[in-house]
Amino acid sequence: MINAIDSELTHPDVVVPTNVAAATPNSVGVVKTQYFEFDEPLALASGQVLERYTLAVHTYGRLNADKTNAVLICHALNASHHVAGISADDPKEVGWWDNMVGPGKPVDTNKFFVIGVNNLGSCFGSTGPASTRPDTGKPWGASFPVVTVEDWVMAQARLADRFGIERFAAVMGGSLGGMQALSWSITCPERVANCVVIASTPRLSAQNIGFNEVARRAIITDPEFHGGDYYAHGVVPKRGLSVARMIGHITYLSDDDMAEKFGRAQRAPSEDGAWRYGFDVEFEVESYLRYQGEKFSKYFDANTYLLITRALDYFDPARSTGGDLTRALSPSKANFLLVSFTTDWRFPPARSREIVKALLNNAAPVTYAEIDAPHGHDAFLLDDARYHAVVREYFKRIDKGLLHG
Image (cartoon, rainbow, N blue to C red):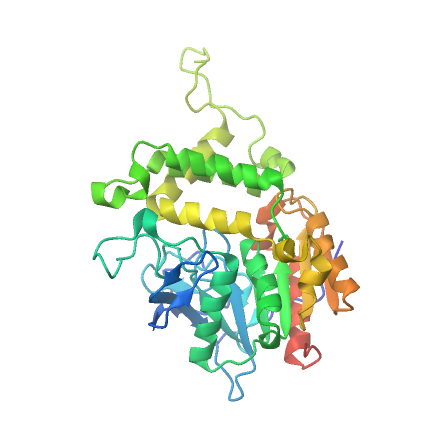
């Protein structure tokens, strides 16, 4: 178990809009999306080429004169470039890692220039299936190219060039974002001083691929899917998306966490005291999952879900080295921080230890923390003083120049 190291700093000069009750203290405040257009064709791992594309970006803090304090935050499956602060488009929307990134927070924006990028193929501003295809004037739909984690790294590297950033002080991510951070250290070793991989894995297990396939089948078999061209029909495969989200959500929580939140609590019987047995919502956990699924189906794109879960499936840096992860990670020149959570059965600590072992085989500098937390995979998004203390201290060392890579 990791103990807390220090307490949260306070920054009374940071002003947060009064109508944003959900924001954490010391928020970066309101942030606007920047859109970066790229006309240089991007060759993808699939052999396809994306002739031009747009990346949606949020930035926090200030880039120093030497451009050496930049931190790239990579997002997970259903997240976006909105890492912290309040969206200028929706004052009720708070960044998904707002408790991690901001003034005085573990990734301190008083010291670091933080960049959040929406991945290609996503549905939050970067070019994706719902974007207009230049040669047809219609949405890409099912014809959008297959993308991989490595493709995202290449696109992000071009974005770094736009900022004049030759080397990131750190590349950081949780879950799928952790895979991207790991890929950065291999693909662009000269450009990463520190690699922070949280609740992640060097590859998906067969069970994880299986969960993804069930979720994809729920979407593809929805009558409103129309082979991925549902935009032309003016519909959305909501039922499939909802089921996909419900499946995913179960895997993000631990058994203990679900038991504590819901147990076997049922709705009250009818007025006459009789139970009405059937297949509608009876248990609280059912109600919760349906709510999460229906909410997700209103804002997420089905084709994006298919693309990103496939990118998850394909990620395996050791594929090119015959399964030898040590050899696969040998190009890296970064320092590493890895964090796992004991109850994360989606990407369990054993997967993080595989990465740690391979890095140690290469004599790479590694810090590893295994946090005893009850929240399952979602723990990487939540407030845990021990977890946040580890990240805070690591970034303090980066700021003091103790970790150069």
